[in-house]
Structures are given as C-alpha cells and as structure tokens.
Image 1 (cartoon, rainbow, N blue to C red):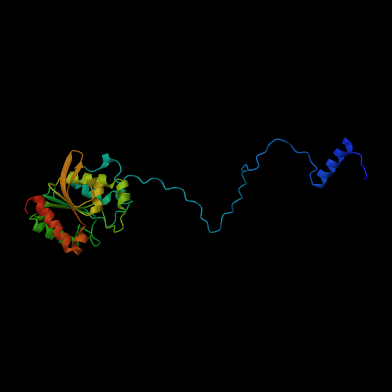
Image 2 (cartoon, helix red, strand yellow):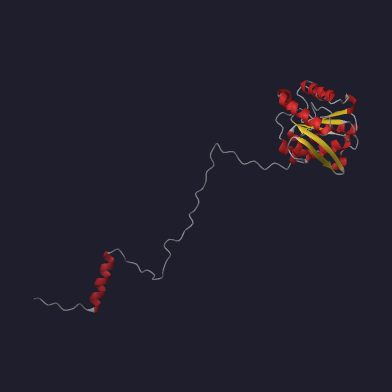
Amino acid sequence: MDSHADPSLEEQFAAALDWWREAGVDHDYSADAQTLLEDVPAEEPQRTPRATEQPQKAPEPPRPDIGGDRESWPQSLEGFAHYWTSDPSLDDGRVDRRVPPRGVHQADLMVLVPMPEADDSDSLLSAAQGKLVANMLRAMEIAPDKAYIASALPRHMPLADWQGLQAAGLGRIIAHHITLAAPRRLLVLGGDILPLLGVEKRRGVLEFKAGETSIHLLASFAPENLLENARLRADLWRRWLDWTGKA
C-alpha cells in the first residue's frame, strides 16, 4: 500500500482557500448576526396623473346660519311677512316666488305646512291644498279671520334638504315665527317640520317650546298626503276631536 505524508498546515490552508474560491466565495464577510427578514421600505414609484383625473376642489366655506344675526330678526308679525319674502339668507339669496303667510295675530289655530303650493304667487295655499285646509277649518268651526296659515319654507321646494336646513338653523326662524304669531293652537301638517321645532317626529299631540313660549300642537301628514288618502284624513279628524274634547 502506498503511503502519503500528511499535508502541512500551509498546504491545508491553501487547499481551503482554493475550495472557497471554487464555491464562489472570494470576499471577507462579517460574522455578526444580520436580520435577513427586516422590512426595507421601498421607494414609492412616481405617480403620473391620468389625463381623465380632475384636480381636487378646495372645500366649500361653511354655510352661514339661515336668518343671520338674531338681533336683526323682525319683532312684529307684520314685519315678519316682509322679512320672509325679502331676506336673502332664507333661500341662498333667491327671493323669487316666495309667498308670505296670511292670517291674524293670536289666531285660534295656526296651520303650518311644509311649503307653498307650486302655483302659489300672492296667496299661500291657493290651489288644491288650500281648499283642503279651508274645508278642514270649516269643519273645525274656525272662521277664516280666526286662523293663521304659514309655511316652513318661503317658496315651493319639492326636493328640499330638510336635514341640511335644520343644520343651517331654519328651525330658529320657524320658532320665532310661531312666537310672533302666538296662536292658541298649532296644527303641523308634515312630519319633516317637526325636527325643526325640536319635537319628536310622530303624529298626535305634542308640545312645542320656544323660550318661555309653550304651545300644544297636533301633528299629522303633509297636505298632499291627506289629499291622496281618505284614511289619513279620517285619522286626523279623530285626533282633532280627541284633542279638542269634541269626540
């Protein structure tokens, strides 16, 4: 058997270096531990706006409160009628087709509806809804000169944003209007009006408070709903009789 002398230390070291070179490792590396799974933030690619994208609009300034400064509000029912048809803050500056309320101070009954009819011009509720209210007053034995007819909006607005109007302070103006009118009773025809007055949105007898003023009101459906449904009219009549003790 052939015998070979053991390689020297120098030969072993040279052979080890040759082995590492063959393995592709020809640099010195640190023996310190490295975190191989550490998240490295990637550079965000530059975003090129699409041709169809529109620049973002600046936020709209907050809408001022409806009615403005309370100190400027009219302090008489006569003054309120002019204010209702001319103050620019009530309807974004529009004053066309506004219709004033009608009736007397301290009426036996104030009827509050959501808005004028589409064809109203000089007189509030001059068409089918007005005929309905007139017939109701006759059945309730309330003379025309003992009633006060008003609307929550100054003109016909079939797509009114009631929540937005409430947030903008329309309820303050309506409450001031009722306080100036000082009716004995209040009939509210339209559920959207009730949150403006700070009362629960439901039918029946409720209580409206504005400062020291406290008036009981009867709430029912809007005039257009009453015109279309005899059952709703019968329900309103029954509630009226119960409320006035004539049942």
